[in-house]
Image 1 (tube, one colour):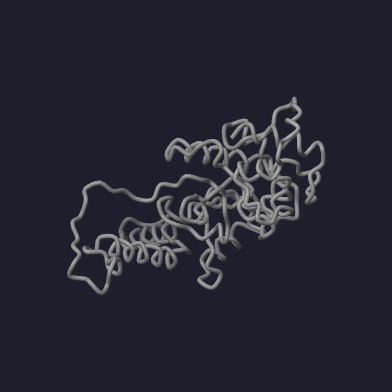
Image 2 (cartoon, helix red, strand yellow):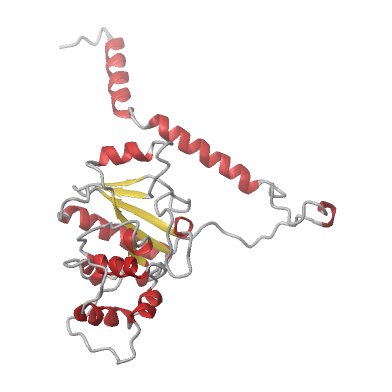
Length: 275
C-alpha cells in the first residue's frame, strides 16, 4: 500500500493516467484539419473577397457591399460507397494521405462504429468525376458515406447497416434531404465505379432513404423509352450501356449485364414512376 506521506507519487500516477486517457494518435492530422478550417474562414471573411472581381480591367467600377442574407453549404444528396479496403484503420489512413487526396464525411465500420471525418458543411473528395441529373459536382452538393467493405464480399453486417440507417435518419431530418436523393457511387459514375455492390437498398428504401420497386409490376406503355426513363431518374446516359449497368447494380443485382431484359424493363418503369 502506498503511504500518504508521499503525495507526489499520487500526483505522478494521476498525471500518467490522464495522459494515457487523453492520447490521440490522430492529433497531428486533426491539427491540420483545424488549420485548413481556419484558412478557409479567412477566405470567407475577407472583404472584399479576393480574386472575385468581375472585371479586373475596370476595377474602379466595382464595389463591395456585404449582404446580411447568406448561409453555408447545405448538402442535398447522400452518396453511399464501399471502401474497397480491408479495415476501418486502413481507410482512415488513406483519408489522411495528401497523395491519395480522397475523403468522405463518414466511415462506418463492420461493427457499426461511425467515424465522422469531414464537417457536413464542408466539401469532401468522395464523388470524383460524376453526374446525377444536371448536377456535375456531387462533391459540392452531397455527403459521402464510406462503408468498410472490400468489395469482394456480399456481407453487410446488421450492425453496420443499422448504424447507417440511424445516421441517414439524422442527415435527412437535419438537412431536409429528399427521399430520392440517397444514391450509390455507381449511380453517379456509370462505367467508372460499381460500389456499393450487392447492397441492401430495399432495406434503406423501406426506411425512407431512396426508392425501390413494388412487389407487383405493371407493364409499361408501348412507347416507353428506357433511355429517357434512366435519364429522368438521374443517370448519365452518355454511355447508355454503362448507365444500364449502374441501374442494374442498384436495382437488379443478380444480373448486372449492360442490356435490359424484359424483367429489368418492368423494374425500370416501376422505379421511374416514383420520380
